[in-house]
Length: 512
Image (cartoon, rainbow, N blue to C red; front, side, top):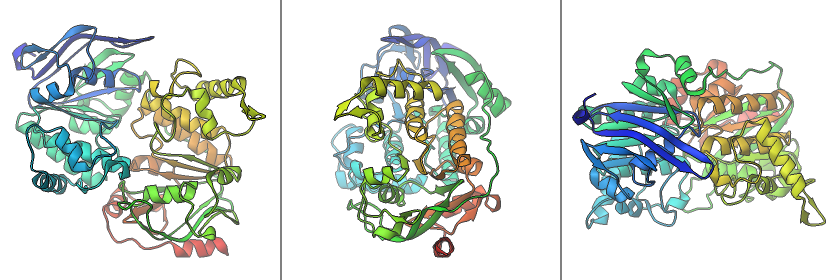
């Protein structure tokens, strides 16, 4: 492609961090109006490359051209001034500010806050991304924060739009609408750089794709001429397997939610209305839904972070746990993986070894003192079993890529062989290889007799591993739906707010 035709042209970009060559002589070109995919496994160097483009990191060598002119933005503000907008997978929002305040920080000039709030609401309606401009970011779910990122970026009217996993928590209908928007933007000359682990999305949306592996470009292709399998081979050198297990009859009721209604702890949270569900031994039950519809409140009630539920409204077997603290629930065999990896699932600055202490409390201390040998052994065993790419057991959690940290956090809970395993967004932002491994571990846990509850916006994931599904919308659960009887379109409609009824009959059966 001629140099002057490029909106963005990277040539020979290299970036090294201590012990890691993140980008190794990477070149990439995006033309005006082109939707260009960037794919690669976790740790392949995609995020580092985007930081270079967006002015958040300076390359050690190489050249960046913008509309033919050599540039090197020294900050995101300079990149935005050029016309580069970015939707981050790991959000760049200030928790203590409201949505409208976060959006205002990214826009130039003096702004009318009331008008900006109306613009945010209008943009949300236009693209199917509803958000309350007055809410504080700390009270938003992961999915709602992602909506804020997308809206904030679109309001900048960028000439190059970088999107990093933008559909992770959207319904199929919202994804379709977003794709329509992206096609419209590209027809108006906006260049789009689209980063996703959902290879079917890349095949559907992008006309070209650059593949990174180990920090280097391993190929440039037309994804529409490739299959998911061939793209997987370019990314990870193999085709990821589907999760497989041993078909067996579900056992006794293990996790029971019985007509649970609760007001949220946060003013902006979602109340739960008469929520009932059952998860049996040797069964995986999924909850589908757009983020912000009560998932966080339900998971907090199950995990014990919110212990205000009536005691017998949440049970493990016949043991009432609604008022028990987190530690007591863990002692009964409950394990939990939250959707937020850093700050909730792991302490960013602590090593992986010390992070094992967050949920393992047996055999790692003696007389109140930490056994460093024990936590090192445990962390190393998780790293080895789950193929976690890390500098070692003492590597800070924040030094791992998102997918590798997720494998460690899931592994930390799986190795306990829990009676009840609850996991939220198990493969959010995780590459196809790591996602396949995590799903296989979840299936293996079910086959070993655990009761597993999976909360996810990844419908294909739920259909692959679950035996039954519920859909949550506006704090209410649908009836229990056998996966064999469900369609993605049906679940997507329920996620979008189609009428849902309670599952009281399920609980009556469980109690019989």
